Image (cartoon, rainbow, N blue to C red; front, side, top):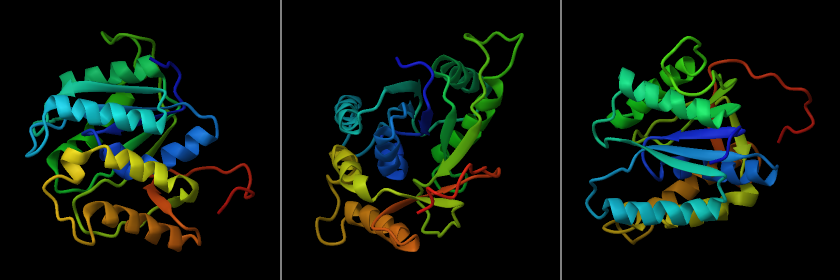
Length: 232
């Protein structure tokens, strides 16, 4: 396990982080940052998956993304809930990995697990800084939260910023292709496939900033810049 991560991505199920942040992971790794994913559930049952299949798919994607850390918190798929027990488990993992920043699912969706993951992540972030508590580990408070999109609604949220992932789009798509049971098996093979849709949306966000591909993010607090030199 890698302590003192620069970025920790909270993912309701294996593949959600890759869908929303897959290209950004490549950007961050290329800059020398330490990046991890914490999957809250194993995502099962699903029509074409199993715990074993999902585990193998996740391991393959993890290698492609060259993550510094990945763990499954072992909460129950389809029954994810932001209760005190789950909050404590997640807060303890934040205290162990000590991320400077968190990526958290966007709060609006039709998938209950995604909504609960958002609530759970924010509650755990607050709890992770507490003293005089039963929680294991030393207090830690991630300074920033970025909200990513891995949603089932056909909506058009207004992002706070779009990150240029042009040099890492193929790595993202390779990682997503690992999740065959979720994104390929049993789905239409005619154009556009689900993976075509994912790539096209990243192309759209790239177009929005004058680049080839991009990933959008929201923040609820202002972000300070030391310079305008790195703006796309």
